[in-house]
Length: 98
Image (cartoon, rainbow, N blue to C red):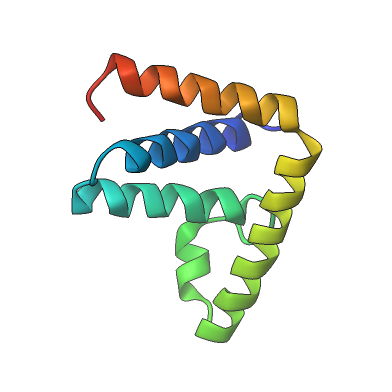
């Protein structure tokens, strides 16, 4: 499991925890959407967000579905790690202003 995948997952879980607690400003929403998209892309052959955006809309939809399926499978295969990352996100949310 790559360090980048763990960092993206941690960022995504922090965004999710923050969104459950407060209305996020547009800049944070955009940042969180980019993190989530990059997380899903890590389960595909598409290397970067720029590469993803350069695809035709129909191809982006297919890649997005593939990435989401990969993410869901990863979550199911790693319940302890996911629980730990989510708990850490909750603690981080308490310790600084998101």
